[in-house]
Image (cartoon, rainbow, N blue to C red; front, side):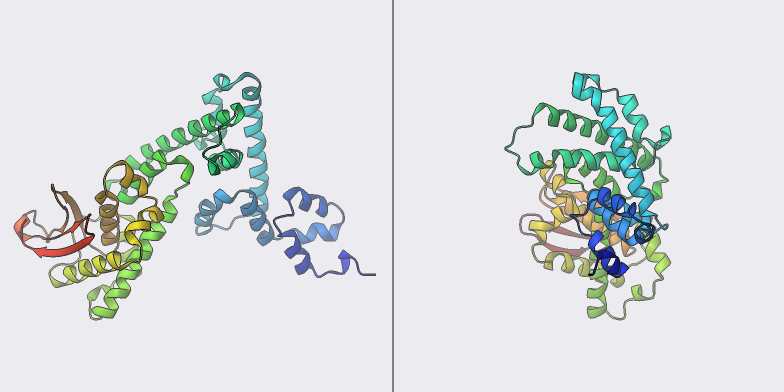
Length: 349
């Protein structure tokens, strides 16, 4: 009679990767015999279990994977430890109420400056959002006392974390103070439960820049941008630039291509701001602000130094020539946020 011992290890690993199999189940399975204990020494298995248990940490860890190899079994242990720390912290709150929250004790649990594990914040937020998820999905559902405590705790965590992130950002060298990063922090402040990540915003802007390059190669295949090195593109992506790499016809072709890509994107004005996480800027401020951020951020990735200039009826986005602040020596274009069209115009306003 066939038993589980007769199954190939690969098949057992596939079974253990199922969402219905918990981390506790895997640990119990490994304790049954030495052979099974060896089967679970698989980083792919633990990575899948990690993302099943802490789904909101996927983007943070995907970004870390670019820099270093991660032992996901150890991360699972860190996640379990952080959950215990959080529940130990919340137990007096369950007994005595939210007024007994000691914020200093809370900060010491997740603040790396206080010797906490550097990803504890994300573990804590993931736990609290999972506890709040039924109420978040059903906004008509009234929070009970315990859920209200969880929400208060979540906001305490979130605001403290974002303040530290903002202070870190404003202390970057000026070249590193990228517009889209500042905008993402603002979005995170206003929409804490939406889990907008800077990585997803950055990836979306990278994709637009790639589409502009594809448009350029189809319409202007001789454009010198195709001789630019990967290192130069990387510098433009991560740094503010003081001047334009392009001028004259080269700059105009890039700007025209950028306009075409953005305004030909299906459903752009209905869905794209939400995709980038900038919908809150549109809601809180005005229609043109998130679009202006997108234009500037993509243009910088293509070697264009641009500024935003507002007027009563249009939002102007202009390109300076090299070493001049003279508007008469500028090329600018405007778009009407009601009609969603755009045009390039040489000369002054």
